[in-house]
Length: 72
Image 1 (cartoon, helix red, strand yellow):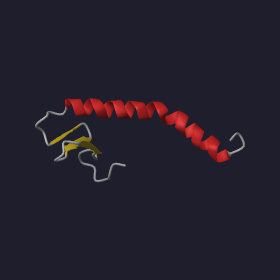
Image 2 (spheres, helix red, strand yellow):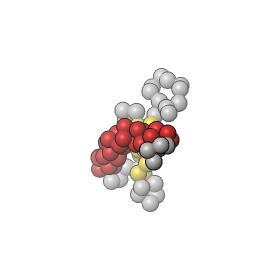
Image 3 (cartoon, helix red, strand yellow):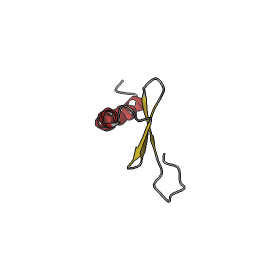
Image 4 (spheres, helix red, strand yellow):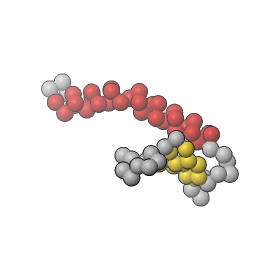
């Protein structure tokens, strides 16, 4: 694959983002541990966590207060 430009580009992205992905997954796991067992929703510091009926927790980034721009 040493002659493929696309392989080279994707390899660079993979290597650059690998550590960030690990940090992201660790943060999600730790946030889930902090959420009280009986809470359906928790918000703070720009994030909203929601617990589904099955118990799964999902996260959503929130726009800063006073801002009407969506968070991407």
